[in-house]
Length: 287
View 1 (cartoon, rainbow, N blue to C red):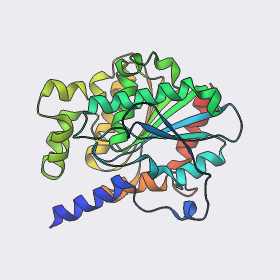
View 2: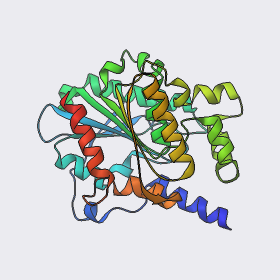
View 3: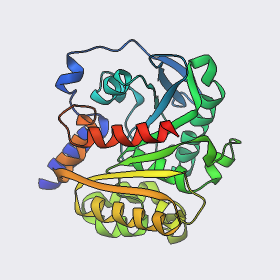
View 4: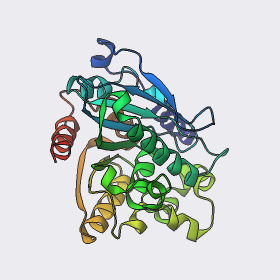
């Protein structure tokens, strides 16, 4: 019974959770939807910035690699807050397990970034100032794209084309360790995503790719989940050892409830992670 309750809470978080009070009181114009591939899920929603040439925040949703949707961004506190700061915002859909692989999902993220950069002038933002943010499975995907240059390289891009990466409460940065840590509660999800081959699991682990080159900077945030906290610190340590600027910071919030809150509440003025992300994005976009 407890396992079913936990799974239900996780499903709620991965499909978006509730809309914040701040977001419910405001409305954002409908985004433009553009395609970066032939599959119906290879789509990205784009909201323009306050002025032409605004920086762009690209968000990648969570969902255990097998669910979730770009529409989770609509009317969210983070969307409304980033718009209030003048930023353009993009929310990426990617193909889902089991119909695709995690490798293909990471490539989807890179392909979406390449399209956004290519069409930056037409879409009204600065293609030289793009930051990647992701939550949960999305945190893993942006961290993987930010540490394994092969995904961007296939699109003709490099780490010079993004200013940095913000993973929000991910935990699969070291996939073999994560599968051992959570085999009882999440083992089926992880095995479906990462399989049983240790070499493949390491290849999909951002921490194992943390030797240079990497994206220019990382802001790795976590709540008080044992696995998320330990893996966030380990990823930051590996990046720092490689000479990559990596900041890691924890926030209040326990278990799956905290995991949901960092995604739902980011952007609310009284949520402690909001000013941390604000300061980091402002500094990266200013360079």
